[in-house]
Image (tube, rainbow, N blue to C red; front, side, top):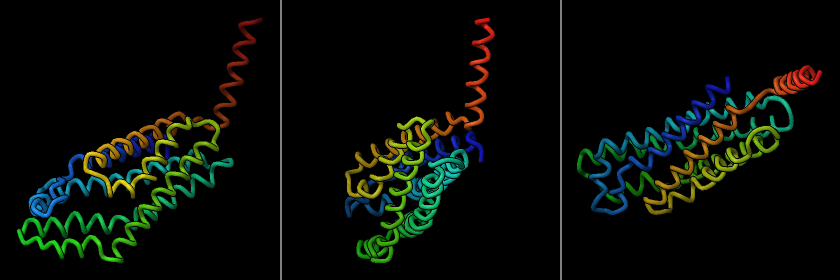
Length: 222
């Protein structure tokens, strides 16, 4: 995985995760608006944007692991990737139920609030989804640790990425406006982490650059 591919994947993933709350209909925050929100074509499209976003961030973290494959940061980078994949596997079934089951209820016009509650808030669903979101938070922190330990990547990218995904679970309890703002934060974190990965130069390359610079300086001085 090259840093160029990782950079593109992180940017695309961040944009899609920002589009999810921005495009998602918010009529379901009231009982009267549930049917219209669920029936909207934007409902499944928004949730599928999130699904694709999570997958693309995983590709980006694969690139982070590859560019930081040596040194004290390698373990954290591997941990971030593995934990992210775990989180993705756990949250996608929930997003699938939201995207397809609730959309089907809306298009049939027979939205039963009790059934919606059962689909969303069953003990198994909530537990699996919550653990998945917690895994995203852990992955974000591990990615930030890997960036910090590298000593060469800009720290801001890892920190913003960690904050965005640490807040992914709490933001579900926020107002729609705050959830949209959180989507922008997540996108910013992904873009900054992508910039950090793009700025990476392997140790051998950095050494050669320093040697070349010194040689050029000596030549000009002579």
